[in-house]
Amino acid sequence: MKLIDFLSEQGISQADFAGSIGVSPATVSRYITGDRAPSSIRVRKIKEVTNGRVTADDLLCGEPAE
Image (tube, rainbow, N blue to C red):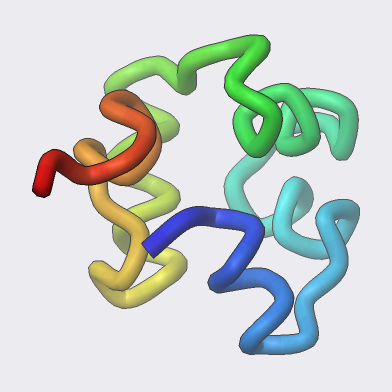
């Protein structure tokens, strides 16, 4: 699941999510737009905070292959 979709579905702001994973809201925005890839530590934290709904593949690989 894309991070933006998770946040929208859960009604979580980028700022609140940023606080929960220890980064700035601008960094979350960059993750969402693909301008920046999260570190492996952040990938694990995102997976943890989203209960596995947003995975490394979702964050690093873009659109899933068909």
